[in-house]
Image (cartoon, rainbow, N blue to C red; front, side, top):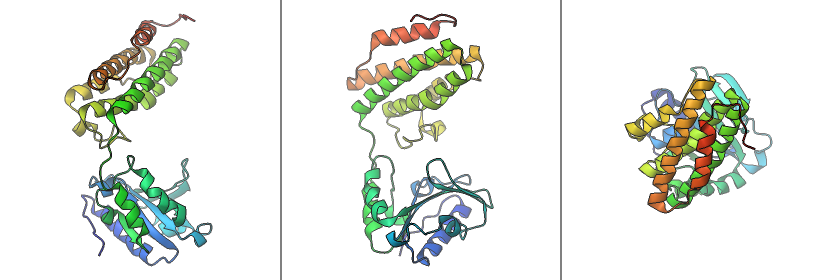
Length: 283
């Protein structure tokens, strides 16, 4: 019998049970695999339901994913999002994301997710498996696969250097909104990843701001807060300088621990650009 964990969200548990029931009765489906917070034991009242629907290859071009998902519960919204995923909003405002894919190549791809997706209990994550192939594939994701510290720290150090230089140029151009977006959507996630790497807290690697309040020490949370700002020029300048100072400290800590390279002279130049008040150009 498949295992059915109980989360802190009874509504989500019922939705998972309903999906399992419908999938078993749908002969065009070869397998169904859950991922996300429910499979990690982190689901709460605000969680969504995320699943792969593996359609038998012969029906892959004709299977109506929207119609099938609509049987789980009434839908207020259903559309194919920017990533090609069926995104839905159920009548109780729970969100859902469903990848509707051909079973043949789709199940073969599952082991390649190692390092990006973890399924601590593959038996619970697999809601339907007609021939055992999906369960075998999901077992590859059972154990944690944290990023390799040295190479990952080097990559992040270089990324932070490059993107913060862009941030400095955008600020000098006077594009406050663009600089604000760049700092918060590109630079900050990479800082948090490097911080997580250094603190040994990589569980939420792909979404490094998730559970930040529980995962990182107060001092790191304060440094992150200092990099945030309203989208007005003086505040963005102050936050950008604080951001770069934190990036440099994280890079230095990584270099001391793993021997990564830090382009010190370039870092100094970036700091000098960020120290300017605008209206100048050194090129």
